[in-house]
Every structure is written in C-alpha cells, then in structure tokens.
Length: 151
Length: 151
DNA sequence: TTGCATTAGTTAATATATTAACAATTAATA
DNA sequence: TATTAATTGTTAATATATTAACTAATGCAA
Image 1 (cartoon, rainbow over the protein chains, first blue to last red):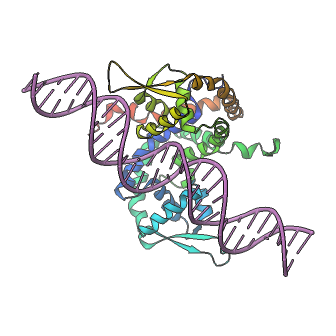
Image 2: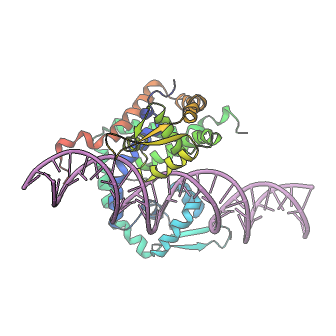
Image 3: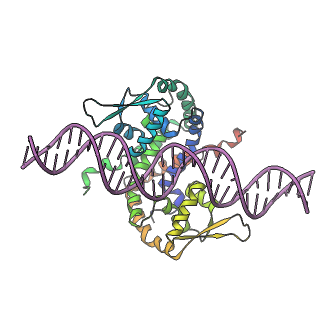
C-alpha cells in the first residue's frame, strides 16, 4: 500500500505543479516566439560565454538528441551559433549571438515578475522546505552510493 | 533578482526531481512494454470501471490530443477499449479489457516497491511538508480566485 | 423550432522526448 | 604504435506535447 491515491503520488504531484506554473511562463515565451526549451538554452547561455552541448544538456535537462534540433532552430532564428572546439574536435560549443544576448534584458524582467508572483503566497520557511524536499529527491542516488552497487 | 540561480529555480527543481525518479519506474514499465503514459491511463482505469476521455485527461494530466493516439495504441495492444456513451453521444468511455485488468496485479507490486524506496529516506514530517508544498503550488490559482478576475 | 453557443473529441502541424544505433574523435593499453 | 575502449554528437524510429482549427452532438434562447 505504498501508493494509495494515484493523484497524490509524488510523480503526479510534481507533474501537476509543473502544469500549474509553466503556462504562466510559456505565455511570456510565446510573445518572444520562444519555446520553453529554447528559453532554457538561452537562459543558460546568458550565464556562459560558451558551453558544450553535453554541459548544456545537463544544465537544461534537455536530452542531447532533442538538443540537436532545438539548437538548429535557435540558429535559424539567429539567436545562437555552433563552434567546434579546437582542442577537442568532438566537442561543440554553443554561443549566444548579439541578438540572443539582447533578449535577456527583455525577457528576464517578465519572467522574474511571474516567479515572484508564484513565490509570494509562501512563507520563507515553507518555500525553503519545498526546495529542500525537492533537492533531496534530486539527490536520492548520490547520497546512498556507498550502500549499493550499480551492476 | 527573483531568480538568481537557474538550476535552483522551482521549475528546474521540479524537472530534476522527475528526472531522478521517473527512470526507476520506466524501467518497470518497459518490462511490460508500457510507456509511462500508457501506464498512467491503466493506473486510472484500475480504479474506474469506465471513464470518459475528458476525465481521463484530467486525472492523467495527459492533454486530450495526445490521449487519442495513446488510447489507440492501448487498444491495439488489447489493453483497453472505447465505448461511446448512449446518453450523450459526444462522450466516449475508455474501459480496461480483461488483459488490461490483469496487468494490475503484476505491475503494481513492482511500482509500490520503488515508491517505497523513494519515500524511505524521508521522515514522515519531511515527506508531508514536501507534499503540502507541492499541493500549494498546484492550487495557486484556486485559492486567490476571489481576489482577481480572469478577463 | 430555428439559430447560436457550448461541449467532447479529433485532426493537423510542428516541436520535443525516448531509446537505440551510429560516426568521429580522443584516451588508454598492450 | 596498432587496438580497443570511452567520449561527444548525431541520426533514426517511434511516442508524446503544444497550439489551433475543426466536427459532431447537445443545450439554450429567440
């Protein structure tokens, strides 16, 4: 009887939370003709001069096969470019273009506004507990590595 | 400065939590040749003799356009069937077949096992706080309905 | 009863996710 | 150094998500 009510299971609650908050952000992205994934990539690029596809995949949580097409479309929109590494020819850096960088000043304030709105009804303590709980879920494996072996 | 670190933003934390726990479940679904979405539908059908597509969409959080194809494939696998309502010819009920029902006894124990594993490292209080926090996120709009108007 | 709005599902077009296989490059090792 | 293993991206096939438009059936009001 680990799961009684499906709708109260952790995965469904996580999905429902995302379902609740994402549309608010997507509304903004649409105004700039960005998809959510395109936004995530730009969001990361605004903090990195250049970044390899592998690391970009880690930071955006976008699987690498998806990344290929998304970056293609961002290039077509003239927001980023690809640059093959000289030191290791396997690696490819993604770089934001001028136009891609300019978006930050336009999009971030809007996004921060929504984010603040979402956060507002929470007490600082409640919010902290929520984040802590999520962090603990995200690190489930890392903590118990010593106890078990992955075959 | 609502969002400082992108990776610590609520949406990314929710995504990361899902990224951490879903593969554990998908591993089981694969053994039964089920996708995650197919599982969700069956999971709900095991608690309902029959259910309309609309309600199924609500409970599984699967958007209705996606539901069409997923149910098609479940029918092809002989796990569910479609039945048009007599009272309201617009509505369509989805029903689990014998074979679909039989899966419950095989899959649920495995899923419950993983779920327990995930829950284990949490204290009852921690877990409750996490669930409460997620619930609050999921009900952001509902609570403040009185204060604002949707145009 | 006709006409219009609403509801329940579906279709279509495009974007993304999932899994497996693959090519190119680099690292490691006999 | 020739081989093999590991790494970084990509391609391919299928499934799902997103948004808009659309059909069929129902509800409701003039």
